[in-house]
Amino acid sequence: MKYSVIIRPEAETELKDAFLWYEKQNRGLGFEFIRCVDAALTLINRSPLIYAEVHNNIRRVLVRKFPFEIFYITDENKIVVLAVFHAKRNPAHWQERR
Image (cartoon, rainbow, N blue to C red; front, side, top):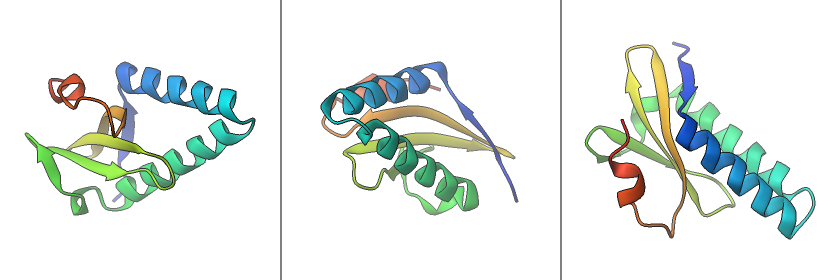
């Protein structure tokens, strides 16, 4: 089954901020970050229920090569990305999103 992926505005902002930060560190690194996020989203789309629930029906997948986590919920035929979050940040910032 193919799911539609919806990225919430807060998650989109986090994604853009991380991209810009990595690009400032090393040209091209932001694009590598986006490729890794895209790969994680592809995995979620293939099998959204295989990742563990970490908080109130919210699931998490780790982004390969980067210290980021993607938090999402599933609802029938859609996946809603709530946060693209640096692993060292306080999780209270994303836990109230729905």
